Amino acid sequence: MNLKVFTTDWEMVEPFITASEVTTAIKVVTVHLEKDGLLGRAETLGVDYLGENAQTITADIETVRRQIEAGAGLKELQELLPPGGARNGLDCALWDLEAKRAGRRIWELLNMDMKPVHTVFTLALGEARAMASKARDCRDMPHLKLKLNSEDTGDKIIAIRKARPDARIMIDANGSWSPELLDKLGDLLAANKIELLEQPLPMGQDEPLRGLKYPVPLCADESCQSSADLERVADCYSAINIKLDKCGGLTDGLKILAWCNNHGKQVMVGNMLGSSLAMAPAMIIAQQAALVDLDGPLWQIGDAQPALRFEGALMQIPERELWG
Image (cartoon, rainbow, N blue to C red; front, side):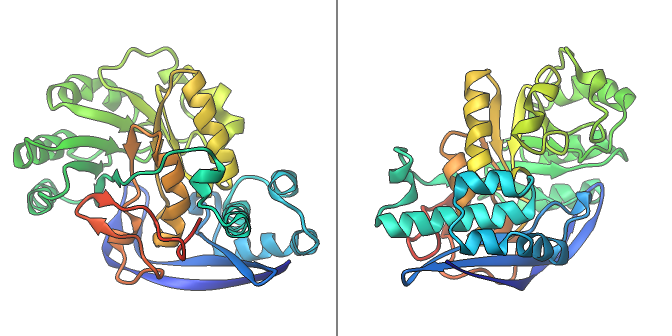
């Protein structure tokens, strides 16, 4: 097996603003695995709030180059590297290569049905009037995800709901709320038909949520990185956001999916930003997800080729040449 690793820069169409950061461009790591004239490839961004970047991911991949080029497979990879960007890139490239070697699409290997899915569209954090205007402008996006912090939160929710009474709306607080604000906003969220609240409290500060009967479902993102965290947060959240960059690839993503199905947890599949090559593996998880947040390519000026085809919010099945 021949392993190649290189970086690609993607520029955002506009600043992607959350409660924790402002992103205008990203540098991703692309992994190529070649064997017998076939190429498996993947893109990974890693988990920036845990200190991962293109440089650290590349260095982590290099630590296992010998084993990978000697033929280590998906099972061995789970032991070679921890969850995160490096394992994600290698894991998804191995899955792609396996599908090409078998001459079958990856969902056929997994005995799954594959169909187009609708993604949410993310509204970056801003002032209430600006976010409402953006919501009004994207009427072809029926499901919106609001990036909100702890400032004027209620006003923003009310303004956006007024602008889009037709939309399904969820909120991502990126851990910026306090338990007091969470309690204060509960009735307002319910009154405005908020479908889901993602990561309201800071990562690791989930104890106030344990056993809480909140008016809308709560979803773990930063507080649940991989399958190893599931039991710890099980009593705090009714939904889990599966991101392949966090959990270290499709292999662990499928493990989380199975656990959620067995424990009655709602499944969301998300992204850390990235091109169509990063989103394609996550579309496997999306087949059984109640909420799909894979709009990363819509936030970029350029894209991997061949790109996923979007018809408004509808994501088409990836082409064979893209992935899987």
